[in-house]
Amino acid sequence: MATVTSIADALQQRLAQAISTAFPDAAEGDPQLRRSDRADFQANGIMSLAKPLRANPREVAARVLEHLAADDVIANLEISGPGFINVTVTDTAILERLAARAVDTRLGVHSTAEPGVTVIDYSQPNIAKEMHVGHLRSTIIGDALVRTLEFAGEKVIRRNHLGDWGTQFGMLIQYLIEHPDELGDDTEGTDTGPSMSRLNRLYKASRAKFDSDTDFADRSRRRVVELQAGDADTVTSWQGMVDESKIYFEAVYARLGVLLEDTDAVGESYYNPMLADVCADLEASGVAVRSDGALCVFFDDIKGPDGEPTPLIVQKSDGGYGYATTDLAAIRDRVGMLGANQLLYIVDARQALHFQMVFETARRAGWLPEDVRALHLGFGTVLGKDGKPFKTRSGETVRLMDLLDEAVGRARIVVSEKSPQLAAEELEDRAKQVGIGAVKYADLSTSRTRDYVFDADRMVSLNGDTGTYLQYAYARIQSILRKAPAGVLPAAHQDLALEPAERALGLLLDEFGATINQVTGTFEPHRLCAYLHNLASAYAAFYEHCPVLKASTREITETRLLLCQLTGQTLRQGMDLLGIGAPEQL
Ligand code: ARG
Image: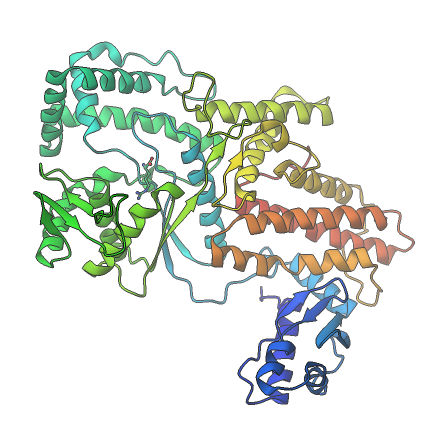
């Protein structure tokens, strides 16, 4: 299927051409086309064109218009205000595009840009620890970006950078060896999946002992050395914890319906064999220097509160490696071995300084060449209804499964009110799609860097800025399509004059591809959320003003059915890119 040139792109080309014909020497040739409520589009670029020419913008606009005429896309052109050009487009241009998009599984959106290789680092929970809302955000945002980048044609490699290595494992393993009964049979798994509580308990108990018992702390430190040296029993014990944690993570991923697979889980331990080499290279090249026994990288502009430079420590004075060294090894691996030309990290905004230092070090070391982009895509904190970082009443971080259960529970109420006759299994299935979709939409619709409040009731509202609203719109569209009489099929009758609500909806449907480009250009899924919400609202306005099955002629009914169909397809495709399910009925 061929790419459908959107109306905005077609106008952009025509206006840019007219500008360069009228003013061949102009430095600024961008028509700056925007949607407008005065006409369909407005070109604001004449102002910046006129300025260096010291000309009257209205006269400049008139000169540009000499090279433009009504055609298959342009219905009318008009100079307005101080020198804007207002453009009205033809109904045919809208109808043609609706028809072309509706018959293409990609809705006429095809990538033209040269695709690259993106490695995306997301989810990243820690072994033997409960996943928290921060990991939820990373998982949801990462999943949406993976789906959207892949749709745009990018080759995407997923990396779940599990926290599966480090000194805390000495303490955990040592405790387990001294208390072998701590990891018994899992009797605490719930119907939503295995429980992490035993590992959690182990973590707390060993931490407490580590902090209070210096002999135990010493034994734990020796245990780390054994782990790093590959001592068989120690490694087996470590592997047991990793495996058990992964069962739990995978249950969360399955419940969320994200794309992450076991092969994507390439945790910190994977890079362990490379760390000595990374440090040796950094020291040999002079990028890192010894300071009080530790191997450090210094930065002119990074200082602590005391005014002293804050280094990135790549090797501690006791010889141990940390989080930063692993990330450096990962960059070397992702660029050198995986051939990435873009590295994305979906990690809490509070880790910004860490990534700034890691990227800068990798650049100096030559592991991150200039043509490879590395971006830390930070995100804000999830807050409770009290506006404070999410905690249970007892002050503990909230279990992720509990949050998901809560959302699905609220969704079950909404669905059973809408469809009281549903069989239990069907109800469960829809409640899950609605509840999980609601959690994802609430997360993705907030601008990534901002904090947001987790409010399960609000999330599943049928008429707010919610995923449920999108799902409801989609389901209503499907029901109309099902009700169309036999033989009456969606079709664009090109000679019809469109109503304002039809034009508004049609023009919005034509913006889907541009929206995808915005998301892949900014890594901000909230732009797609906003688009889909606008689309569902424009559909509601259309549905209110334009009867579909009871329209006065068959041509009108068929054309409106086409609008319904393409709106449904676009909503479903858009929701799919966000990882949100689209049930046929609610
Ligand atoms: N496991 C870390 C945490 O829970 C996040 C890891 C982020 N990714 C990375 N490549 N450093 O905070």
